[in-house]
Each structure stands twice: as C-alpha cells, then as structure tokens.
Image (cartoon, rainbow over all chains, first blue to last red; front, top):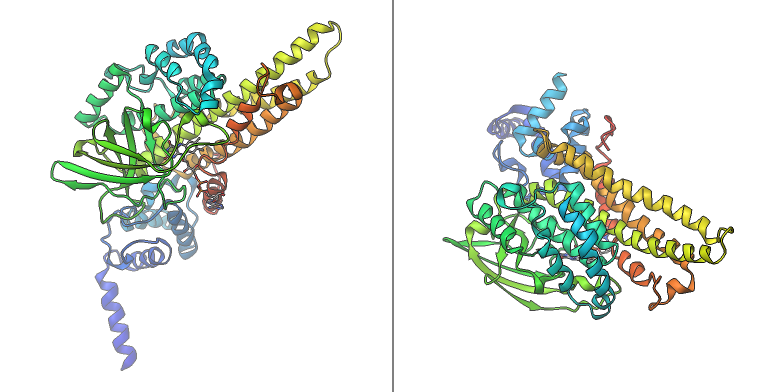
Length: 100
Length: 387
Ligand SMILES: Cc1cc2nc3c(=O)[nH]c(=O)nc-3n(C[C@H](O)[C@H](O)[C@H](O)COP(=O)(O)OP(=O)(O)OC[C@H]3O[C@@H](n4cnc5c(N)ncnc54)[C@H](O)[C@@H]3O)c2cc1C
C-alpha cells in the first residue's frame, strides 16, 4: 500500500513536468549543481536559468553533471551560454547528442 | 591610424614629460588627457556614423600600448575608457538614448570610468550586491565601490548592479550615470605601490537617473561579448607597453655603453637580446588575439561565439600569461640597467615600470581567473584546437 501511494505520487509529480523523463533528469542536475535561487522543479521549461541565479561557474558544473548523467560529451561548440540557458534548450542539446 | 599616429608623435611626448610627477603625486594625468581629447582619441571606439572613429580591437590596443610605454597610468585610463565605450557601442545601439549619448561623447570627448568592484563581492565582477531600483521613469542606484579609477575626474560612470531588488547576484545589468546623476563619497585612499596616477580609491556612489540609462540586455552577455575581451586584450597591450618602456631604457643604456668602446659588444647586450625575444612574444600574444577578435566580428555568429568557453579560455590565457611575463621582462630590464635603473632619478630608471607592472596579476586576480579556467577545462575538450 505504502509503495503504491509513493509510486503514484512520484508519477504525479513527473507528469507535472512537461518534457518527460529527460526533463526530469535535467531538473535534478540543475537542482544539485545550478545553485538556482528557486527550486529547479518549479521552473518553467523556457525560464532563463541565468536570471534564476545560475552563475557561469555553476553552469560549468551543470555541463559536467549532464555529461555524467546522460553519458554524453558536449562538443566545444555547444559549450555556450545560450545552449544552457533553459531546461528546454538543454533538453534539445541532450536530444541532439543522443540522437546522433 | 590617425589617432595612433597622434599618440605616437604628440601625446606620448606630453605624457612622458609628466609621467614621473603623475606617479609621485598620485594625480590624474590631465595634460595627457587634454592632448588625447585634442586628438579625438576618446571617441576611437565610437562607431563612425555616430561621430567616432570606429577603431577595431587591434587599433585600440596599439593606442594603449603606445601610451603606456611612456606613462602606465595614462595607458590604463585610456584602456578602461575604451572598454566602457565599447560596452555601450556594442550593446546600446538599439537604444535612442545610447546612440545619442555616444554622439555626445564623441562631440564633447567625455571620459567614462568603470564601477564593477564592490565591497562584499571580493573581486568577482560577475556578481553584485547592489541593485538598480526602478521607480516609474527613474531609477535609484547606490553602490559601495572598492575601487574606481579616475572616478573623481570622469564625466560619467558605467556601473554593474543587479537587475532589480529581487534579482539573483549574477543577474546583472550595466547602468550609465552621468555627471549630475550621482554623488561620490570617498571611502578609502589610493596610496599604492604602482599605477598611482589611475587615482583609484573606494567610493560610495549614490545616484538616480532616467531608466533609459540602463543598458539594454544582460551584463552576463555584454561581459562575455565585450567587457572581458576588451579588458583582457587592452590590458595585455598596455602591460606590454610598460614592459616595452623598461626595455627601451635598458636598450638605450646598452647602446651608450657600446658607443664608449666601438668594436666590443657590451656584456649586457646578450641579456638585451634575450629580453627582446620575450617582449616580442608578449606583443605577438595580444596582437594575435586582437586580430582574431577583429576577424570574428564580420561573422554572423560573432556574438554567439564569444559566449562559448573557447573564447573565455583564450582570453583568460592571454591575461594570465601576459601579466606574469611582463614582470619578468621588467625584472630583466633592471638586471641590464643595474644600479642606474635602480635609481629613481636616473634617465634609465625602471622603478616606476616595475611597480606599475606588478598590478597586472592583481587587477582581477590571476588566482581567481585560473580557478575559473580550471573549472572550464573539466568540460572543454579543445577538440577543434579552438583555444
Ligand atoms: C590599478 C587598478 C585599477 C583598478 N580600477 C578599477 C576600477 O576602475 N573599477 C573597478 O571596479 N575595479 C577596479 N580595480 C579592481 C579590480 O577590478 C579587482 O576587483 C581587484 O583588483 C581585485 O581585488 P582583490 O585582490 O581584493 O580581490 P580578489 O579577486 O577577491 O582576490 C583576493 C585574494 O583571493 C585570492 N583568490 C580569489 N579568488 C580565488 C580563487 N578562486 N582561487 C584561489 N584564490 C583566489 C586572490 O589570489 C587574492 O589573493 C582596479 C584594480 C587595480 C589594481
């Protein structure tokens, strides 16, 4: 009973995030490494992460953690402020690398 | 080329004449700046259609280097002014106010100072404590600044601050304060080892002005696209100029020794040859980055590329390596000149150069920059030899 409740609770939470599972993992990375002034789980997909308090140093940690989380390597030309400016932009970059 | 020519032929002579006094009295080099204004050098970075000369990075850097060779403080003030103008010229052209202001700047040869450092942010220019607060058509902005070079002699200040009272520390904007908008209360002194003529004490800045003086966009972008590249390249060029000034004095001493005994090369000449090689490497370092920067500007992606880690690392590398090398070069110049160079009142004295050049590694701490580069290298692969 206990497990069923928490599973459905998690599903409910996940459902609240547009963009599916990848977006959820991206939010987790941002929550742990983005040093945002608000929770990464409460941000809109297209909210500007820099305006939400992510410093340039924090953004490097986010890049590093994303590489580990998704087992990818961002090529240098993608290591650009604008590629990491929102959850949606990061999602697109991750998808591009995973699809390639 | 006109401004550079004027600096080499006219301004440098005036700056050289007053450099020792500027240093000793820690005063603003007003004779140099009167001459620079007469040569219209303060609008070198203003676009041509707004009445300026539209100089690129390579040309601005050559101006700073030439001036710093005879007066470091003058070279630094000119560099810092160009940096502020470039921020407005590259990020303000869509604003009627900033277009008009740049026109006025060119017409009246206005001097702009920089207010990035703040009590409590410890030299991290990418975070602010103070915030600009909009109240209808006007703003209020108060900043406790640790260091404002030539703040008391400037016609305007370009200030970093948070975008609004509830913005994150790194969510910054640039705000222009014109004379009349602000008061300065001096909080600390500027009795330093070197760069004394930059007159850079701390000030409490209190201001209010019309909101159109807030530069459009984010400082996050204008910092990476303009403030950092212009700072690191122009600073590198002027630091090389200071080192070049010391080497020129060493060279003149070696030549005068050689004249006493034609046919025998003085022993110090071998060291001169070595230090010349170091000086050339430093000059080519900033020249190459400046040319690369200028070449990039014709590309559609220029502004995007400047936001990438490749450029951030390249500029950090330039800053760290030049600021270290110039100290070694001036040290070598001192070994060549010997006791004559050590004397403050001899014509080949390199004491001022030595003291001035020691500021290079502190002016945005090399340790801080190295720590940032180190973090970037954890993700940067240099897979296209982009560095
Ligand atoms: C000649 C001159 C003119 C200037 N003019 C202006 C001006 O006009 N306007 C303006 O706003 N500012 C100006 N500045 C200030 C300048 O921009 C810097 O803010 C200032 O030099 C840094 O001061 P700091 O050494 O106290 O700061 P910090 O950078 O905080 O350094 C303090 C100490 O901490 C160490 N440190 C810092 N970060 C790290 C790290 N990550 N890892 C290891 N060690 C670290 C440094 O090595 C240093 O020992 C000027 C400075 C100089 C020298």
